[in-house]
Image (tube, rainbow, N blue to C red):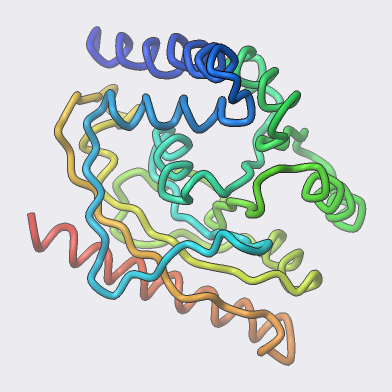
Length: 242
């Protein structure tokens, strides 16, 4: 447990200060979050292994990236997997925990969009996201459609449809990305952390265009089916190969 908390302090507190300071000293303030993510992945000695049929992350136009969510380590891992193209939705408590990183990204990248839970007006929330997109330097938005961490589950969670509604209404491309294996390197539920090396398996699926679906219900049905299929493919690939 001492090792776990030592790694947590180093990655989430020390490196979250070192990354922004390094970006400032090298005159690259817009890369503050990127530097933190790079350093965190390097610290845990994570190795990325993509499935043979994996596609490339779309980074040349506005896209909603649908990731599975396992641990708190996903935030820096998924930043790297997205090729530093993704903006993140986060509660304001994250800004309290990592003030230096929050200040730098608010000033220069606008890549973490802080919000308070409890709002029921989706129209206003969607307009707020539109505004954030317009100010951000990154083109994509990373979303966890399962809504919470699934830890070591061998199945996908029940989908939340709120952000899928946004993608459908705004006709934004979506792309499913599955990452498995992080729980062997970082698992806050079990107070476990390892300096590796640890191998992760990754599947980046093809682009899904909302325009091809006549109704929102058909769009959601397809997303759910493809998310489940990609998860199962990646799960089999990762655990049967190890």
